[in-house]
Length: 183
Image (cartoon, rainbow, N blue to C red; front, side, top):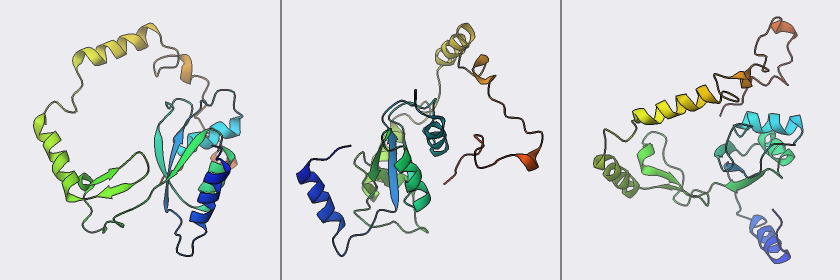
């Protein structure tokens, strides 16, 4: 993302304040496809959870640590990074309720009892059918995988992936695609 001279100056002034605190969490979104990228860029995105079979626009939260920021720097042309801010402060660990939390698109983490009231209203409208899948939906999906199996779990898309390990002591875990970073 290129910034104009004025925006760049404002960003520099904001980050060089004496009381500036770096964000503890970054919200990372893939904005470009990985087709045609080198294998090491694809591997970095796969480990972050933004790999090949993930739709553009998916967002993941990444801690702001030097290991992750160095990886993000390598794929900066494929992603958009938004710092997560806590305008109301960090919620206490003991009393944390996920229904009171909300993360906005611009990276603000909101934590307020009114959010819980809104979520409870949404749940009370249709609590039983909210997470159910219609029979027609999964039948259509199964039929699609049956008639066009390429790239599906049933088809030949996963045959080229070797997940076996005959000599675990000789395996290079640094470049192993089956290991994914967990937060």
